[in-house]
Every structure is written in structure tokens, then in C-alpha cells.
Amino acid sequence: MAEPTKTFPKKEAALAAGLSEKVVAKAFKEGGKKGVEIEGAADTSGLTCFCTRMQSSDGNIKLLEAAMEGMNAVPDPEDPEERKGCSGHIAKLIISENEKEGKIAMVAYVPEDIKDKLNAIEWMKAVCETELGGGVGGAPDDSSTDVWATCTAVEDKENFFFLKMKDNTLSAAIAYLREKGLFQDDESDDEGDNAAADFEW
Image 1: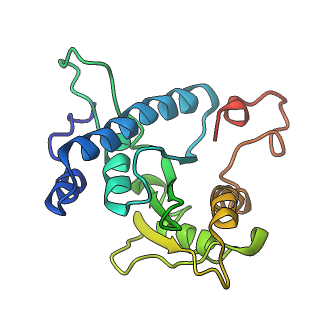
Image 2: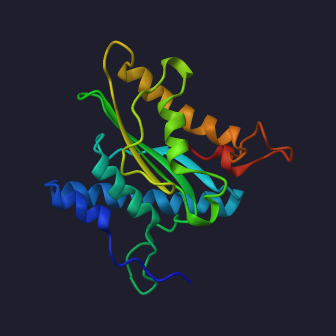
């Protein structure tokens, strides 16, 4: 059994950047709760990859990274509080929008044991460069790695429009997984019912 997570560098980085403790805690907590949901979906369907939108990060990449850290956290079995995180074995691309500022933050995470099948930078690039519905724009940040990639795509009103970008991000992320044979849904399931297809992506 993995040791409980005791340090959270992304969460600390968000606080060091001047974001309020309350705001950071909210994003981290949402990630923890969503992580448990993802773990449950994986247990019932066998999914290894997941894409979803996050509500508490407001298009801020540091908050979204903290949320991803919450998703991946290993809980302390002795902690009486509710179970959180638990999805570090699932590859994820998460998205957060800020309509007022016309920007979309994205974080992609790939666990070490499947990085031979999926690369976080390439996954992020596929979303940024998609031609679906008018595209998304942006590019993986220079600090991105094969297992952790970040990007903030910004509306420019000439090539990329926020509402279309918002619609396209999740679709493009899932389309890339389909191309790689890593997304389970009714289209690729010969056995009929598939719990992953019924889960809210």
C-alpha cells in the first residue's frame, strides 16, 4: 500500500503565488472529492484515463495544479475524515475556464506506469492544436514534462473564441484518447454496457 501523501508542492506554490488559503483549499478539496469519484469509476469499468472540468479553479493554472494534486493524493487510513484523492493511478486531463478573462487552464497528468502509452505533453498539444469546432489554441508550458503538462489558452477574438474553445477542450482531449485506444465508451465496447461511458466525463 502506498504511503499517505504528506507534502503538496503544487498547493504550496499556489499559496506562495499570493492566492488566498481559502481559495486554494477549495480547489484542492474539489480535486480530492473528484479523485474519489474517478477511483470509483475505474473500479467498476477498468478505465485508465479520464477527462473532466473543474469548477473551483477559475481558469487559474496554479489552482488547477493544486486540484490535480488533490486528485492524486494518497489518504491517511488513520484519518477519520472522509476519503479523498485516490486516483493517482489514473491519467487525467482537467480543465478550468474563466469566461470574464477569456482563458482556459488545462493540466494533464500521466502516471509513470502508463507513460509508454500516453505522453502528457503530446496529449496537451493535441488539445491545443485540435481542428474540432474552430480549435482551442495555446501550447504546453515550457515547464511541462512527459507526465505533467500545463497550458493556459487565451481567447484572441480573431482566431479563437472563448465559447468555442470551452466546447472544444473536453472533446479534443477525449478524441485523442480514442485515437490512442485508451478511451472506453459504447463506441469501442463490444460487450455492451460500459460503466465508463455512463460516467459524467
